[in-house]
Length: 113
Length: 119
Image (cartoon, rainbow over all chains, first blue to last red; front, side, top):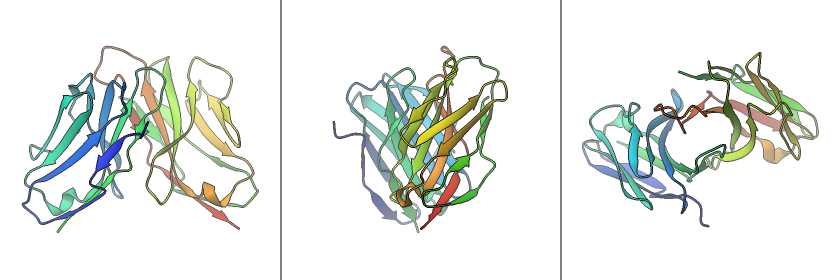
């Protein structure tokens, strides 16, 4: 298996633009998570899905952020409009139910200028 | 809600020596999982070791072992025979087993400990 695949690896965009981050989880995993990592706040859970259904989106910072999982093999995290404070590394991870740890993607480094 | 605390922002160790990274957590649950993740400069998050709370035996993976003290809610990571490749940020994480709530399946991370390995 190729692991969790995220794209793009790096994204630089101007303030006010829409940004879409993409994730392909490991086949057969029924949980998908979106995390954000910054120096100040560490790793924050934004939202997670179980069997394509959003379970907890309480970590989504504001209405500018939205996430979808239209099928078991694809998820997106969208920021519209983007702001400089959204600059961070965004990780997608997937997992089986149970005692398994997550498998993380390699992350997307987002820079909003 | 569960919280995970790593009180050592930075640690250092000489190559071939042993180092222990600390982690404490707060929970009212009796069954859960604990993990250590490693994040090298490449930023990839790598699972190092995991422990089921119901198991009294401490988990071991090659040079990595844990000291799990359930009553004290402590979960430290010991790295033996440290290597230069062990230099990374290490995260402790907690995963609930309590099905039915919105926390189920979710990993809660500590703030991380940066480990430096000196040659």
